[in-house]
Image (cartoon, rainbow, N blue to C red; front, side, top):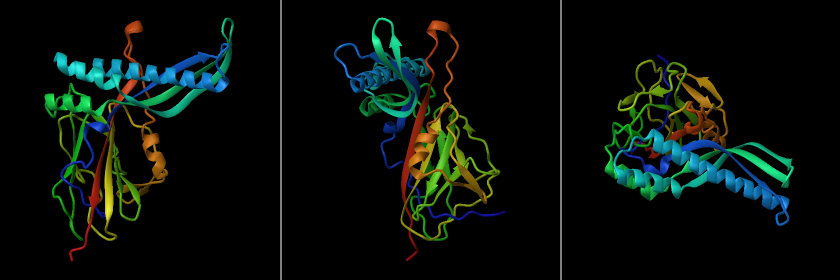
Length: 288
């Protein structure tokens, strides 16, 4: 069996705040007209602001409909979390100027956006729900069998979600090399059941995680969503994939989720998807 040796050390818990990693990805549109008091730039900014506002509304509607939080106070926290959400633009899908018969020159923009709920409100929800509650917003845990690893040690990585999810696991070593551990050439599945612990490597994997030089600060990142993730460029390297996409573009491309609106006419749930990013900061060392 061909092995793939990488340097790694992963702590028992994520270094960053668990709930700040939760978000919702959606698409929305906004429009504005110049009138007598707006420049073209101001009109474009107004349309973008409108699109962001709709993105927050869509995300809130989607999450409250998909997460079956029955306790009134928890539902209130969830609504509050999205009422105070931040919005990051993933992609400007469409934008154009057009003539409106009554308003004159107008501007329309359609965006794909990531809506990031207020961390404090999300923490309140987490404290009031069970860790594996599938009715709560998507949450992923990542951990390993030990806290520290030295040269020659072998590592086992584990992931677990509170509900069914799609995932990509990326590893960056001390030399800046980035590889994709899952999916890989021998384990192509990216869909995982909720409430189940998954081990890496295992099953059809054809690599081992064995600590080797160079040593230093490293990290493993888990991207997860309730919808299939966006594609990145990779190339098979033994039992894993070498990531060809630039490091700065991995997050954006992974968030390029194909959103599908559920049927339901006027009462249809907005096209959106829950998203989660978990990162563990790592350190490796020699035996001496």
